Length: 412
Ligand SMILES: Cc1cc2nc3c(=O)[nH]c(=O)nc-3n(C[C@H](O)[C@H](O)[C@H](O)COP(=O)(O)O)c2cc1C
Image (cartoon, rainbow, N blue to C red):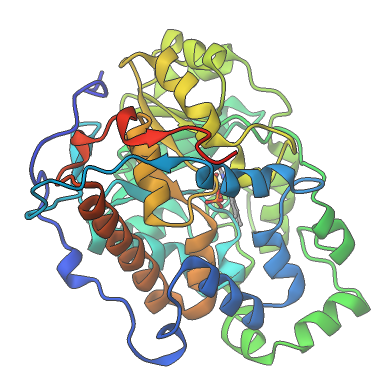
């Protein structure tokens, strides 16, 4: 099917385009030194209920926080006497190079943060030479993103729908638009209890209550820049699926009611047979389901708990990674997301066997902070952090990393 078990390519497999990417030196981004700074800017610029929709997690947000703190428990074991000139971050998976070992993960609803957010994210991913995953529930459609960023390494994320015809059509659209991989998310079959959303009255389609109207009114800049734009509330991929006179509200309702409540290996097998390019299952945190993905003939898995947005109490993904890598035993390409906030997190995941990390909220906050400039800033920032960590660890290539570079539970 694909060369998903191929080793990380040595040397620069793609022409790194990082020289084109710059961290901002002026304006509101000039003092955003880490992703937490971007989160703070986003909080100041967004209505509370929109910020909380992005920032929040399931129930008590135990997993949300655990994802982040679990990285901090891992200690590095650097090699300080080493040749570190000529560092490259290039990695390779599914037969193509990526200029860095991270990509932009799928996120629905980014149009609430910035107009044409998905197009911006894909364009910047292309400029950086890294993958971009478009969500089923994205604000911009597969076709819009393909037209605006044809050169991007575009992947498509699918939530499985009850109607097999709809699943098939979405796969056909993704293939026709040149998406190179399919990411099927399996951890979101029913909506989690997101306490912040309940408190704030956040619902889709959006309901206008005195509270939400007050919340919006406190952010006139956001109202002017984002809310009045059609793309803010659109679900681009659904619009052409809902018959005549589509509206954003109808599209959201359709998305909500048509999602399949349960997904079994049989449904995944149907998708596997339909999709001839690389296919990944997103939401895997156990050896058992990794074995299932191997048996299915998947090409990869994304070790993910949806950024702690769903089943609260799920293990942190960095803690789950070793068992998934062991169960995959070279037969799957293993990616990881959830809680990745800095370059050193990416390097820790690679040392433990991930090929690449997907970034979620930091990109969303960067969009909310400054749109295109924000995304450029955060991608350049994480790239710069990885470069420094590489140098300080004493390595020049990502394929030099192995578990001997970290100590698990170094700091319980
Ligand atoms: C606002 C938002 C929307 C998301 N929408 C989707 C989605 O539509 N499909 C999906 O597979 N994952 C979705 N996710 C989960 C992300 O793909 C990813 O798993 C998660 O954000 C990673 O964790 P992090 O935010 O800590 O980086 C969403 C995450 C956020 C923050």
